[in-house]
Image (cartoon, rainbow over all chains, first blue to last red; front, side, top):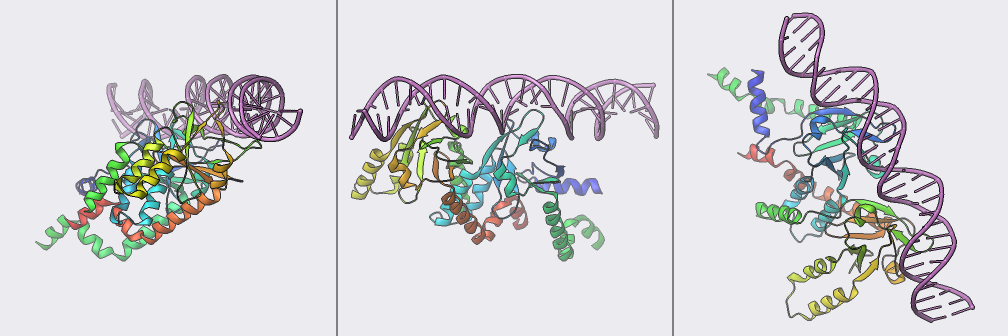
Amino acid sequence: MNAATDNQALQGASASPARFTGRYAGKLDAKGRIVVPPEFRQRLTNGEVFVFQHFDEPLLQCGDDQLVHDLLSMLGGLDEFDDDRAILEEEITGGVMRLGVDDTGRTSLPKALRDHAALEGPLGFAGRGQHFVLGTAAYLDSRRDAARAAAAKHRETLRARMLPSVRSRRSS
Amino acid sequence: MNAATDNQALQGASASPARFTGRYAGKLDAKGRIVVPPEFRQRLTNGEVFVFQHFDEPLLQCGDDQLVHDLLSMLGGLDEFDDDRAILEEEITGGVMRLGVDDTGRTSLPKALRDHAALEGPLGFAGRGQHFVLGTAAYLDSRRDAARAAAAKHRETLRARMLPSVRSRRSS
DNA sequence: TTGTTTCCCATGCTGTCCCATGCTATCCCA
DNA sequence: TGGGATAGCATGGGACAGCATGGGAAACAA
């Protein structure tokens, strides 16, 4: 049963294919470099990674050259002539940094980026569908805990939608 | 409508890929010179940088010989025979200054330009897609803060658009 | 001349690229 | 099902290109 439901979950998520999934550990080495998880690196184009400082979390949003588009597409709901929209567009197109990844999979992060996510000690990469994020393991853990708490809160609702086949079988 | 604006945003960003992105620190040296970030300098043609005093911000807009075109294209929305448009066209074509960049990547800014952006102490270069801007680090930081405030203000709207696959699935 | 600007030389350094080594996870075959 | 072979990964570190920075000399303006 697990294989079947897994496949359904994957297909559902891949309506727009989830390219970056899963969590991986990482850390800065003595020279301030970090290894991009091979799983993610394989999905990047041209040995480049694009990085953006998340607007309201101590995270770095990472992806390929599509990252700017993904971030800009957030603004679709805002009025075209809104000042807020203009400033957000500026900060997104200008704020994304292009970093090189060497052929052992490492990249070195400028200090400004390291500071934004308070990168130090154990770090973590986490898939987010069309991009992935980098942050401290502690922060990512706290997000996971929050997600689990939310899941517990909405347990029944989630269950009802998670296993439709089981429900129909049970009810028949 | 949202689909339309999304497409516009995507096309706008991808039709001509963002050449100038990221933020870099800088400062004036004892002789009033400033180092153009290598990342930006590599994308300039002919070792020249074109500079324009931003109309309503203490920033210098910098780019290559395309800068004039980009600035003039702002006027596309104005009536062709409007007096204001004529004035603006004059100011743009006449106001853009061409500066030389020496082979160590430095350029020296005329006093008028320095004054316009109140350049002193720690400065910053920030990508803006087809061009980049130069200003004090303090001013650029304030712009970034404003963007983050705007993002917080429209948080729900932005969130809803960040994960389109999940939303479409839910609504289907 | 005197002051200012432009160009270029020189030096030390930092970041980038890449090599090398040992390890580990995976695959395949007995 | 166990174990050997192998490809890919983790990690350290060396070498060098390019960068940051200071400053001198020539060209130019006042």
